[in-house]
Image (cartoon, rainbow, N blue to C red; front, side, top):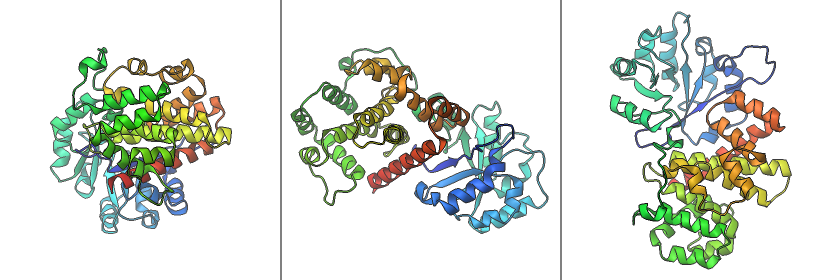
Length: 402
């Protein structure tokens, strides 16, 4: 993310699936994985023009393979190593001239790659390193873009900004800065806090509130109506004309799809970030991934289980949205014990899918493989659902920003 908390780049992670007795590393798997992804499957279109960081070895950089890959999109990330071939700095200069950027991953104070620093575009520095400020000053002195990595808490984000970082890699947006004990929502409510109004609406709808409740709510909240219609028109494909009212949305889309957009609306109102924001994207991806997985498992369309899967994914990140304990947020909804346990305890079918979604988002690929075996989900189905959900979110965000 940049300093406005907008997503500007992604990390591409390759994981060898095969003989567990063979030792593999991302940079050694990179040639086949990257070439397959970006030349044969067209994955470069999936990232909508954003940068993609991929781990590669020095030997890969010295070969002709990088020149086969898309220009101005891939950033080759070079990890620490005991050996670097002669002429690597010149090779990096050649690659940059051809439109390929290079980054140094896990850069440290006494890094053996220090001589490469003037030649690369990016340096990733672990925010948890005791010498992080000194490392940042050393790297930024040669006009290299410094990225704070492992920024997984709001506290780490504040520290990175204080040091001077303007780019951040991590999952800090997915966690509350401090989960506080709940007081009644009404006592904390302010005129500007529209999220609580939408939360109240969702609670009413979950208790079988009528369509009139929906229309009356948005009549009383004109600014929310505008934001809601932006979301509906950005996410709705297959409609040749723009939807101009909530009543029209109910008629054309139906109630269940519209409730999904209400869930997205909650995240779009998070004024800590620019919109579309990373928390909204992560929650929408999680919900869509779980919906697709249920669809693959049941081979049915329009199943209520798909709506439940989407809701579990979206609700599971509300703690970060409201900076509130998740169990206390869910007490507002008349959820079945099974759904509540799926969200809070990660139990049952949907709870298992939620565990897989979290592991994918937080790069715990060994956990993904173990859960896939435990829950009997083929890896290719997981990967297909992951990419399809990512594409859906990317398309939605692109339309929302246009």
